[in-house]
Amino acid sequence: MPEGHTIHKAARNQRVLVGKLVRASSPQGRFTEVAQLDRARLVDIEPLGKHLFYRFERRGRVRRLHVHLGLAGRFRLHSSPPPAPVGAVRLRLVTDEQTLDLRGPLICELVDDITYAAARARLGPDPIAPRSSPARFRTRLARTRVSIGAMLLDQSVIAGVGNVYRAELLFLAGIDPRRPSRDLTRVEVDHLWQLARMLLRAGVTDGRIVTTRYGGADLPAAPKWRRTYAYKQRECLRCGSAIDRVKLAGRPCFFCPHCQR
DNA sequence: TTTTTATGGTCAC
DNA sequence: TGACCCTAAAAAT
Image (cartoon, rainbow, N blue to C red; front, side, top):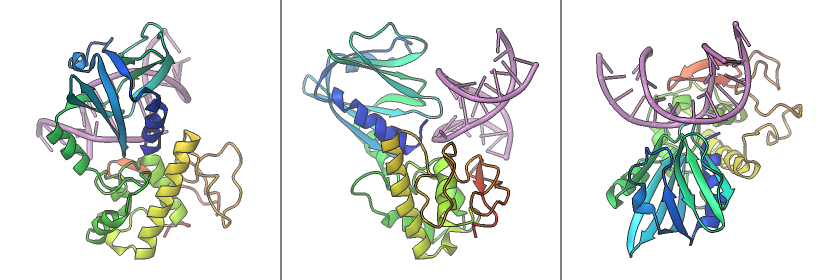
């Protein structure tokens, strides 16, 4: 399920296709430009936040594909030859060894260099990326009264955080999601960034969001079935208070009113 | 079997 | 802010 970790995991899995010539098709028919990718060579896959950018080359020309899974989008990797497409497969890339299916994406489109650069420029630093820096994250938070809960869902502030990680980051940092961003201390902001790095990278490895394995010594051990501290929970694992929820940036943010200040 | 819900985002008002 | 889009899985019937 797609927050940033899903996208980076997908990019890793799909690396087996890099360097290969692909047969491209859109069994569903909705990706009308797909012919431009047919018999092209996939040369690179770049994940950034919740977005994926693919670079292809065909007859010496670069083609760029932009994919965003949205809420419902999924990838599936088959071994070739692939089974007949089931359901709404927007894009199918077939190589000799592997076949990649994409269904239900929010975005699946070819982009020119300008559009590509603009899409990237709209995104904030991605804590999963090896060389990302929290500098822009800090400056965006420093001068706004918008709540930290709302800012964490803004992809131009920090790329890749979604509603689950938002709740978990704020719980582990002990920060009330309603606080104005500019009131956070430098230590709190840096703590949020470090937690984002750690938790989202763990999500790439684990292939899902499990934050209760990464809580630290001050928290009681979580039962094995419990994957989150705050998101969609009823009771706080630390103090037993009822988990509360507040709508921020249009979506429910779960938090402990006692532990998060 | 049908309905609801979701970890996302855009657009019109 | 709410309506809407997309799809699949979970929940309700």
